[in-house]
Length: 173
Image 1 (cartoon, one colour):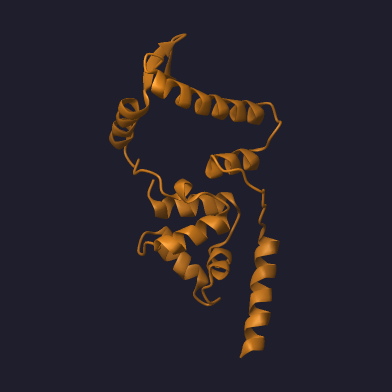
Image 2 (spheres, rainbow, N blue to C red):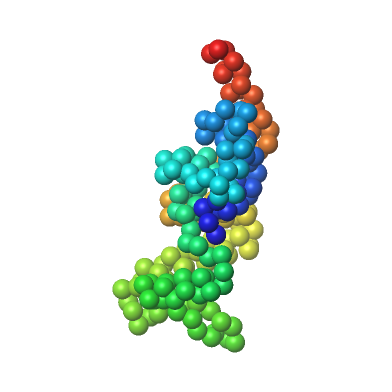
């Protein structure tokens, strides 16, 4: 998934409008949504500093936006092969199911990878058990490994911020 698709995907998951993101980013109200639309459809690629600001607005790490290109299954497979080479994550059949497992014969990789996969599994179990909701799970994933303060934007908040911006902007004229 390209940066453009990740921005759109996470913005929608956060229930934010293009206008909200663009306005908070500092674009004028008239073109705020069209500027974000250009980033989301790939017509423009945000500069590094703009990407960092978009990540802050969305409440995610820039790493969550800058994913490898996995737009085909062949590219996904080659990414998995590279992960096997670098990190020792390999495939095995366990109980008749195909599973990705940390290669215990590579202790330099196994220890670090196992602890991170275990942390992921614990969060997934909390989600399944109802101890956290999907928003909290996504916040954990998109900010990993950084801890975060949860912000739940809404359309009401978006409208209020745009109105406040407009009020302050008109005063300056």
